[in-house]
Image 1: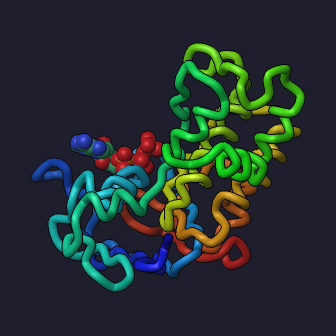
Image 2: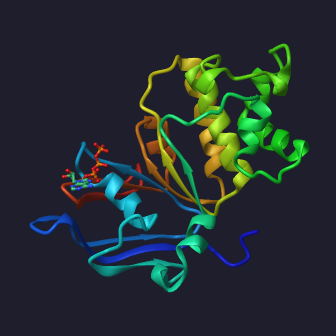
Image 3: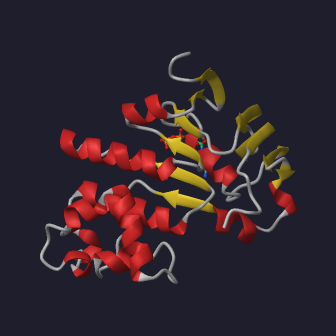
Length: 230
Ligand code: ATP
């Protein structure tokens, strides 16, 4: 269901501030080809979230343009944009229901088979098989019966099911054991495959595997390139 969107994204000569006398981005430029994954790195306050806010159109540029498939995103509706953007956030919100229903939240009309297919893709299936009620197991209040890594995988499955052309991934900073780390790493690659993605990246593996690394400092790109180049 991506017929109408390739997924090229361009930030073109963007100027942006939240407060009149506090410039955040000035002549900011970034060109991302369809399907590429971009790791956004930089200290707190460097502007990572601001870029995501602008791409999501929670805020609009003061000047310059954000182009999606070479077309200013303000030429279309916010609804159009939000149907094509997906989010995987740091601490995913889980509902006090089953694993199956928590994944289905990505696309409410999905069949059980579609939900399970998405779950398999990112490795949810591997741990679900070992619990008594499988996909019908309750996750507990806000998912407290699951580990941090399991919650993350469920949110990945949700995103795979929703199948957005452009994905925003705010990578979790929480530390997990090295085995789960590997599972998450593999799942991340599956999730990103074929999508244009913007990742507020915290894991070295994600940064290494991304097509483009953008290092920000006070709203400016200080370095940009692939892992090999930097
Ligand atoms: P973090 O890693 O802490 O999330 P970040 O790289 O995402 O940081 P931003 O949140 O984009 O950084 O912040 C960039 C600058 O914009 C900072 O100086 C911040 O104080 C400022 N800023 C962010 N949001 C607002 C807001 N709603 N109103 C005013 N200033 C803001």
